[in-house]
Length: 343
Image (tube, rainbow, N blue to C red):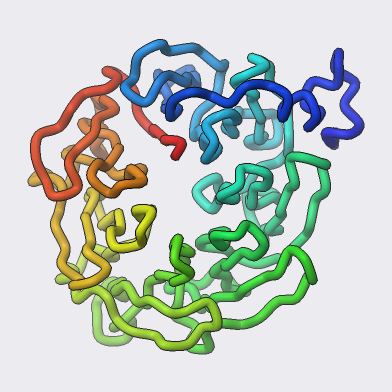
């Protein structure tokens, strides 16, 4: 596997010195996917203008500084992870095989990523990759459901179970990148989907009612401090029998606003959550094709996502924004989906 210090491409394509010497991207960066049979990844300005095609692939993840895009490309043994430098206009394979691209995180300082490696079946390996020096850290193995970096980019929190059972018998762990020490934060085997907030709080879902509900537990969001203490419940969501409930996606920079996704059978839609009051507001009236959330703006006023995707045939997706408090959709890119935003 190539690392940044051992690349054979001309002029050390991804040498960190070259990257740091380039001017920063002036505006926030938007990435998205177009096409279903032969999907391709694009990047553009935050308003959808000035689009450029990166190449064949999907599930793009733009760095917080807007300069680097990680995306998924089909390979002979599954999916491979590719890295694309926007300032250089060049790409490179980073990891193969890439497992479950939804368990992924950028560090806030844009120097590292956390992702899963492994075959389609069986336990996956959680990896941290330093994009400046190519160093790879193996954190652990298991069946992971979420990962997130600390605001200082020196720790991660993750949720993992050791069996593939449903509901997952998952707990939350904190890992120090500097010391390699792992600390268990939960002990109830029903904690999933952790997201580390900008002020140090960690929001996560607890799977409640596994024995009393007919088709599976319902997620309610809780919050803890970085030591796994001072736990309190944030949401009291009504979850129908065929739904799973909320999972966190992203915070506003002050930590008061949280974008979440309500998921279930034939339904997935964005819900805005006030972290102070626990109030929830669905951002669509159509749970099937209305609005799937992807990101929240730093000031917390705007939510990015996909409309018109749905669960049936003949989807007509479009990348749109919606006010956090609700309101009309603004189309950024037609016939596109899976958007991400830089800060």
